[in-house]
Image (cartoon, rainbow over all chains, first blue to last red; front, side, top):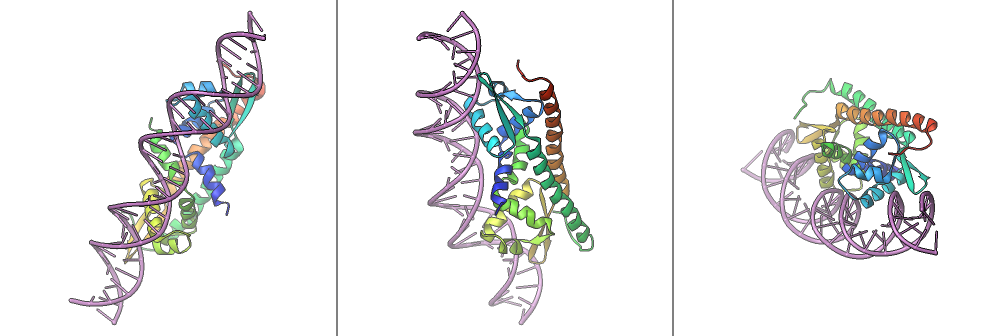
Length: 106
Length: 106
DNA sequence: ATTAACCGTTAGAATCCACTAACCGATCGG
DNA sequence: CCGATCGGTTAGTGGATTCTAACGGTTAAT
């Protein structure tokens, strides 16, 4: 089942540090050092997170001298967004069905 | 950083079982028993996952006799989708910048 | 009242995850 | 060649997570 590979992709966004990395990369490509400088964890930790994000296909890297520039992969972001959008649209349909039935809320 | 609260929301989608639950609920509201019947884990585990999803605001529940009906919360789904969409749009902009300027530095 | 169905919660064990520290290779400037 | 900078990888540890099993509470029907 591809739900496992999907879970890896969503899991890549599940960590606070990785989410911060994605947010920073959204502003533009960055080297690992610059990235780590703005985060409360070591460069090593950032490197490990980048590996996870890269394996998930969310970021891409390019060598530039002694540094390595990372940037977001818009295609992967769009894929996840579209998946959420599908759930959202189908949830709205289920909502319409529930209008007929009574009771709700917590 | 309030990215911790965000991480909780994304973290709710990080688990394969929870992702399967969301996918099933997208087809329509379901009771816990029906939900667990189609999953390879116990009903107890499903109940715990539903609590996590509920705390994250992704699902809502309603009592119906002895059962409890769960359904997706379209608002929360849309919020996550929009966040991804923002990253995606800004990533595209960074993409365009990278085409013109080969290197990025301090 | 008693039984059955349905669900949430707890306890505990096994597993997974994020982090630091230390090390190694690759690259650039002298 | 040498030293410095940059980044990936490994080992090890503390904490978080997921699961099953067992229990208790609530509702519906007999």
